[in-house]
Image (cartoon, rainbow, N blue to C red):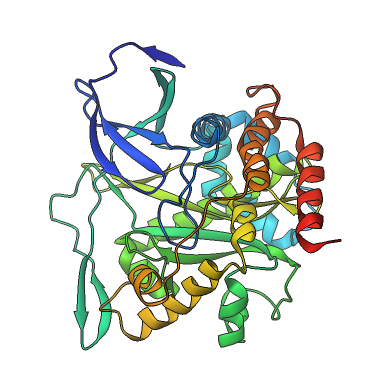
Length: 397
């Protein structure tokens, strides 16, 4: 961890709902990620309150995962520990024999993370800068369309692949996959599953789905559209799939060692283009509970916990209705419809809910790093006990 004293040398280049990107002078090609204590659910943007310790926890966890996955020794251990009875053994053998896994075993994971920086008590993740080629939004014939630019002849050194790559080990209650399977029962076959799964069912192999990254809402993509949107050559797109499977298996291994179930998650990638025409994929963004669905003793330990606290509230029901209306008539956003037409906005968490959620991220950071980074946060078992008590109070059980 590098401590810095100059507090006003940063330049804000992007601010999202929960994260800021800073540029610092004299450090060409680098950005700082600042994870805030804000949170966002249901594509709403910044919610009315904050979660204590969230930003610091996410920075520490992101650095921890990047550092762990960069070590060849980790992948060597993973390749030896191939006795995973939950995963189809033929599938597992194919991954272990693939050149992408062999490169990980030899060299470790390549990623965009450089270092943790600390300034004025705040933590930042220093990462390699990548160009973002944003799509152009148009409404054509009453339809929301996004036009993605072609790669310029002189390609940028590094560019963000405009995809969220989602992996799934199973289909827990609340998964968006349930709705897609209800709409198209044959979709399971296209994912490589032998039959349509039931809610709460584990798969015999992780499956991969694609969603947009640079649009206001995460739009599901078929493989063909994802391949075209990625602007990757066939070999690099295949490598992206293999890398996603390998990373999913790696994270499954890490969380299983803490008795935490990893059900699904998402990755983002940067394509680094060499002068010789080669393309190197770097794991980008971050890894943590905001990108993963984690369950411990039947209780959600990720952003899904917060989603469930809002599930069934007047605001959450209005969001669902507003999204349906906006899909039919995209000239007005769902958020505008929710606020103006349906008169609903999110309320802050209750005192009891906030006390619980404020422990979530620090407890996960302590557990995964194996040390008490956050004093007094408690452990997983005490967090689950508190969550169970809160649920019982809400249901009158």
